[in-house]
Image (cartoon, rainbow, N blue to C red):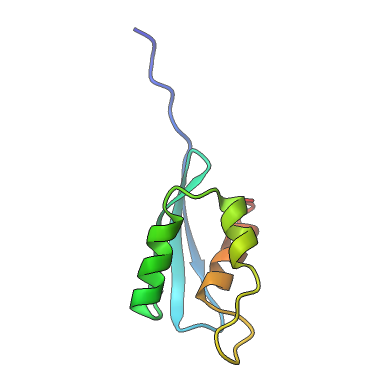
Length: 91
């Protein structure tokens, strides 16, 4: 019986700046986003965003989330996730 191929897995914790959430954690499993979690922030919104991104391609998530602002702030929780994806070369 052939050995099972190990799927690449990487956990990332990104400290945010300028948002209500203090950090974002997520896993890259086989090149897809999994277990996206925001510490703090608007719970309903971040929980919804996390569920929508489950299994998503990081490049697609980056493209959709980059530049979203929260009120008068120059960034947002979704934008911070896009920055985390960019900073960790996930795209």
